[in-house]
Image 1 (cartoon, rainbow, N blue to C red):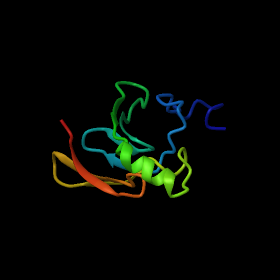
Image 2 (spheres, rainbow, N blue to C red):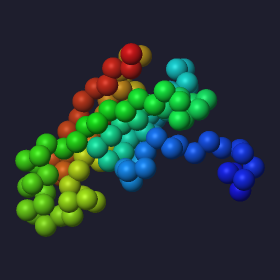
Image 3 (spheres, rainbow, N blue to C red):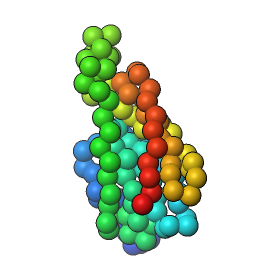
Image 4 (tube, one colour):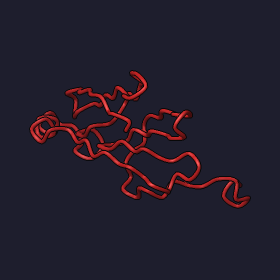
Length: 111
């Protein structure tokens, strides 16, 4: 119904099936951060398909191999699924991902 009534703009920036997991709204800067499989997207709130910024943050290859050796599915489990997007201060966001069952965290500077 929303598409038919032109009441929404679908995000077309990823057709890779990235399994979106977490969102962080930055109203002050008019942005939306989206955590996905191996990626973090920074989207414009006015038009989510305009000026898309993307960070590619995969799990380390050796961690992916260990994950596969443990019997996990390479496509649905052995990746860095971004689970945490948390404001840290006015300039940074704290980010954590699964890291193919070896969690890792870091900070993103919102320049």
